[in-house]
Image (cartoon, rainbow, N blue to C red; front, side, top):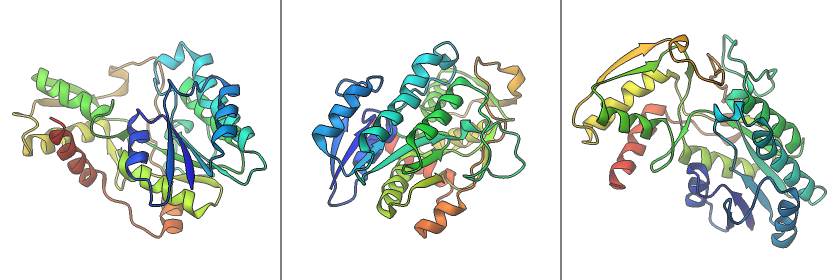
Length: 285
């Protein structure tokens, strides 16, 4: 069996290659080998490789910059899944499209279900919602949130750097969601692909947190294993005190019960996965 995996230099792409099941060969595609803004190039690579599966882990993820680059964000986040869907049409092969909690507006009082109405509040969120539509009804669409991995560009590694450099930090405490370790996300993507049931699914680690909660946990766990020599002062602040070009959802917890029931597993708490990631980060030096 052959899978095309895009975004292989990103943290999810690397995790997908590392967790690929036995019997799968992966064609690893980065931005040098496939320009996701070029629909003709996408059609050519699908025609040449004849994959059984496409795992589209690549995306335009610069949330704030997307506000000033809406055309580029939509070209990559909506145009690429559209091109993959058209290239795979009538082949019986499946597209797995990774999406985001940012397709929701954050006003829910409970975890967002896959069939809840979308109302993105940012260019990034709108482009990912358009990507879901473009992927089509035959795709497996997986929404996730707050993804991180050792060696990647993410909140955990940014916090580690700032905690080494500063005596104190301010971190937003009124945005609620769930961190997601890329390794568990990748494993879920492979297992959903094996089920081969198109639809929209949610994946995140267990538990909920604010960015402040996440930062405090990073500091405590990193100090416990020697990644930090001290824990700086961390002060909770409101979103209004840290304005950004893009609006973030205040509450973006995803209801993952349908995914867990289909796969017959229990997801791991985010703090447990954070500990594992930090040990991997320490091993990287």
